[in-house]
Length: 70
Image 1 (cartoon, helix red, strand yellow):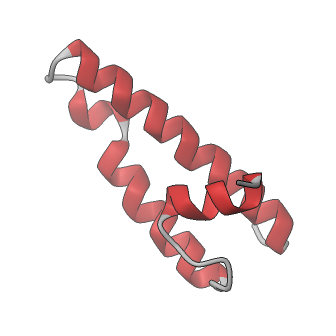
Image 2 (tube, rainbow, N blue to C red; image 1 turned 90 degrees about the vertical axis):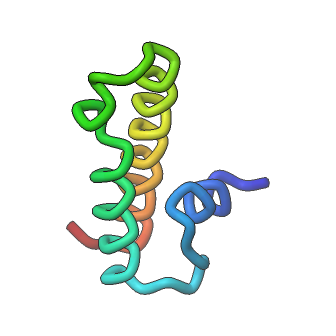
């Protein structure tokens, strides 16, 4: 699977999605997986959340550059 497809999958959106939907999906996931939201939970959950948070940010940064928006 190409990086492009993986990034869309991480954000849970289709490759034909426009930038407004990409931003909305990103914001929703960032709130859900933000490390501060799980500080009170088990260390394993904290690690998983941190990893997912990083994947979400990486996907958004890549798609933002690819689609040409801020």
